[in-house]
Amino acid sequence: PAFALLHQTYLMLAEYFRQSVRSMEGLDNEKRKQLEFAVNALAEAMSPGNILLTNPVVMKRTVETRGQNLVKGMQHLIADLKRGQLTHTDPEAFTLGENLAATPGKVVHETALYQLIQYSPTKEAYEVPLVIFPPWINRFYILDLNPKKCFVKWAVDQGLTVFVVSWRSADETIADVVWDDYIQAQIDAIEHIRERLKVPHVHTIGYCVAGTTLAATLAILARRGEADKVKSATFFTAQVDFERSGDLKHFIDDAQLEMIENLSPQGYLDGRYLAATFNALRGKDLIWNYVVNNYYLGKAPFPF
Image 1 (cartoon, rainbow, N blue to C red):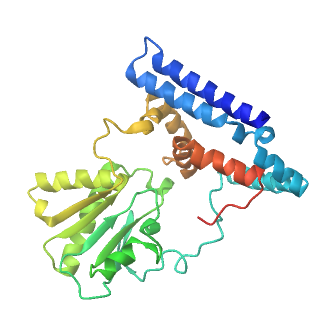
Image 2 (image 1 turned 135 degrees about the vertical axis):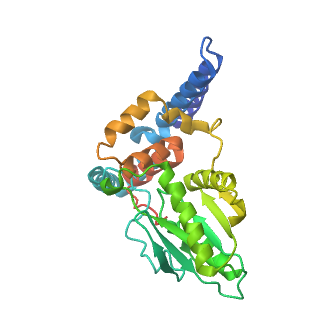
Image 3 (image 1 turned 60 degrees about the vertical axis):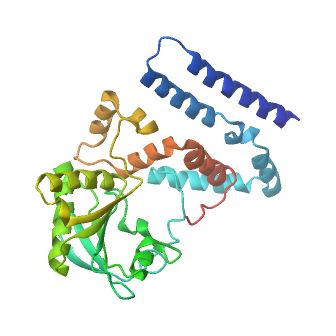
């Protein structure tokens, strides 16, 4: 009964504060959305399930293991503090070429900014090849995870000759690279594939921010009168109009851009800061879920 009362009281207070923001006068729409996001994040953080002494599952586990879950949880916390990042998966569970990125392919072109990987079809090939542009901040094998979760393998099994761009990881040696360079790299990849296979055009896929770039690439090709070099374009979770870009806009204003600049004195942003931002967008699933599992219950992260 005590935990049930605590639960209902928390839900009531959380809804009260959310409603207070919604009914607050004198705020413009953007400021209200920012405040709503902050209140939601605070409400998620203050959930009784995220507090050691008010989570009945954690208390039961602590009694059953005589506190060993908290000992293991502290070890996980110390390891994460050393890494400077919350652990979401078992980092030792995956090996490239074995249970990750296992589709056979080969690098056929390389520049200072990317490598181009070619995958041959497993049946009679269609004439028009497919080139995939993954996000700059992901590995190319986001689309080649394992045989059951692999877009690349599915595509070659349909008879498509598939090319995937593998972007170079950001470091100080490419600190001068800008938006235009990624657009030029996409045009370069398209041209290389057309020349390599002697085909007039290619199918394209742009994933996430590389889809945003692909939209710009298509616009430039169209302006040059070369739109027919791309037969089709498909966008995976990609925005081309940022007018209504959701909660991500709360992280982009003058003060935050200045902070990002201060965090990247060498000309590139540490990926851990990006990870923290994406985690904050889905705090319940990507932060507190792991705090309870890894630190309170002492469980090892699932190999995800």
